[in-house]
Length: 576
Image (cartoon, rainbow, N blue to C red; front, side, top):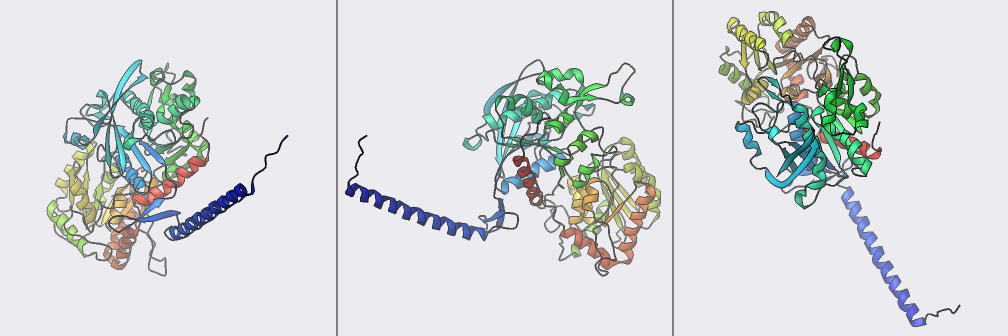
């Protein structure tokens, strides 16, 4: 074979070219090295790079960003009935601020009230879709608003347009809730693939945060209808359990309406125990949407560490404790955050006087203003106890009613705000008539009044039977109001029992927690709190300051969520 000979001139030209490119590449590497060294100075202990915003304040961003899709039945300020709305209205904003791309998918509710105006800025994307379920094709549309760095996507369908709250009206829960939230789940699975938000779609590599049973079909759909066809093979789903008592249970015959393959019935299969069946011929067979999510999601979360343990027990598992226990290795709890802009005693527009951890003098002015507003005798030194919450069995209102004569026999004042069971509403009115100088019961819910009670009271009472997280105790501590709580779920996690002898007598703790849930133990904890308020002012001030120092911001919660995202991404998709 004839060899080709390279001339000396060409050889040296090529050699010189290689040397030039090597020099350029070396300079590039040196530049990159110096940039890395300089940027590393701005990275904190969490592996998060700090950036400076336009106002000159430091903001933290995550190193690894994810495409995150929240699926939820409610998200404040658009729709809210409780803590779920708060979480899905605030956590997405916190994650977006840390550099993630975040979408929230929720129904576009219209109920004929002023709340409909919340959706005014959401624009029709002109993207209609037909979903095959419930024996036919259901047409949905998507609306979109970009706010605070988050894509708020609203699923529109006539079933979301009716009077009442998201789940029911004065006659009870809507009978077609399974249908309404099946549409939500299908829409949420399609949204990242078809909606060009900001010019391009989220794509298949997403992390779905599915909240409670209303979004529970999402991980089932990913496993049964998408991954078998190579779609969403790199996506992950994380189920967030806010309240295990609501599971989306319907008759077994409704499974065919969900549009799932028949071989996946076992994922949702549920059989009621004999004692829970309606009659002797009842087989107890049903479908349980939340159970389906538990067995198909990649990871499980609850809204506090304590609740993540409680749901694995017979008492707190609502029949799902064995399944949840089998998945303990991927079950975690993260305490919810609070909106520190809305709930800030130094700037709260609803309270009479502002105060802070450095100057607590304004708190007594809030107390005097509250006493005056409610018509109670103005007594700045009288212990003022507050309660804010639904008037139902879960919140322990029956325990308060039972103990009220003994509580009000002491030289205290007691204020309650809430609505719910008519019998408890009537009891509040009757108690106010009996104890005119000591007790006030505000039937209903009023946001400004809830702020003024939180700021004006000395003690907040929360005898909840179970509390997945609880927010009122977090608000109370931020306002220097001392919580007295039943040691359950998030209450046990967040309220540290007062110990006056710790730290060489300076004390530790942020309140009182009691066990068991009984009238006697609740009264004992209350009496300790009242006595400390009256006789140990320095200890009381220490309690106030320690509570106000606690960090329950959404940014802190977001950092913990990022760790769970990382774990979910490392593990392969879970299929059982």
